[in-house]
Length: 354
Image (tube, rainbow, N blue to C red; front, side, top):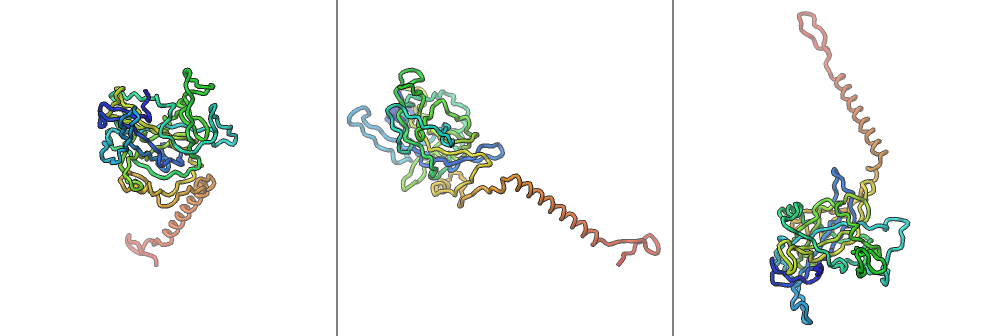
């Protein structure tokens, strides 16, 4: 039975004896980033931010089913709640010879840009979090999480509404020959599960939530403040949430409770990086709540002249010229200002010349 996006009956943990449905939504996506380098690490900007909503499901499986959101987030124990990210490349959008996007049979090519909290075709996915947990996970859960980020998205390449993947009729192939591992669509272009390049991510890929007042409501937010990417190109993030200390009735290990796909962003080379925008109100608000962030009051554009090899050569030449001139001036001053001495008329003393 798939769990992602569906109500889950828990038998242990803080929700033991209750049926809970979780929902993720990206309220701020990254717009751009600079290719990661060991000596020059720049995180995605603005930092991605995802909200978590939890719903109590009553009388699940009956006509009288009711969902009630757990609005008082102070009643939720956040220790053990984790959100992880996967990275997927988006091909074709930056090419002048982009081909027509692939559209599965019976689907329309027109889609409303938005992010989906669940992906039907991937609802069977289940992570095996057997204990002891991986070192990276254990380290993140035991240390102070990197809960940073925040900005409203403005990039023009918004993700498209994901088309429902076709029914799988055989391993690896769906209806009409469509690959069965397609999990999402961006502007009509398919994103396949096996295209994941999560290993190209640098930084905290697991974070815990923090409670933030946003638009008059206290919300749980996962903030990814220090993510960087080792490759250039266009990408999207997939967010997945699970609870380390809760168990579903039919699983021995934690299960993925919710997922969503974020908006598209671009990672530039150092030479092409256009600079950073001023921090948004959301970013500033997160900082006021103790989330560690770099706040910018104004836009910071990259100075093209500084990146020019000719400019750097001229600057270096001018610096050497100034150094040589200063040295010559100092030497001349020492010679002119020194007091010349010569032997006196008697004894071994010296007389100073006026």
